[in-house]
Length: 268
Image (cartoon, rainbow, N blue to C red; front, side, top):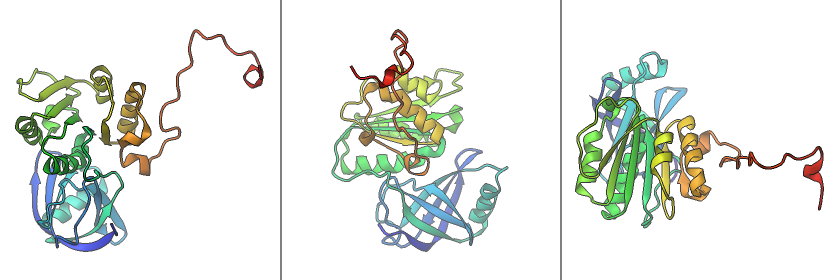
């Protein structure tokens, strides 16, 4: 899709937690068309554009949803919050991003996100379930505290309404054991450690990762021993923070005899 610059109406700004707020924008349906998983840029001023994942699948209604983490100590964050609260219209550029869900695919989905990375995964999940309500989908959402699961009720509803959907809430500081619910599993700890303990196979699975470069590559390294191949895993991080090599190099066998000087270049 061609990137377009347009003006959108601010429909609403709603606090979801003390740190995260949801913004609903309105615009012409054909102008804001996008693929599930793409992002837009909001203009803070003439020279500053800030990217945010589009947190809704395309539905033809001319509405866009954003989930924004508010960092009071960051200049752009404070200015953006002020703009969204007091301005009726904003300039946006969209769509951006190649980490998208292709149509007419039936492969099981493994969606892994941290914090507001859930926004991108929400759009992908909505599109996948709208196209095929029986598609297998496993959502892993990692946060520090349970209150950071700002859309917990939505993720739980997906698991409740679709027997093929599983929601894994990964809370780093999980003090109390939450209630048991069908399709919902709670984990305590870091997302990479939890994945290492819980994921057994990646056969036939399409994987989407949403989070910081550190989080994304930690998950890649954790999944690599299960036979992960680059073609089955997708993330915007791979575009703006590429890593070489993409997959971790095999660890040396600690029991193997060390090479003598120059031996690595010798031919048999």
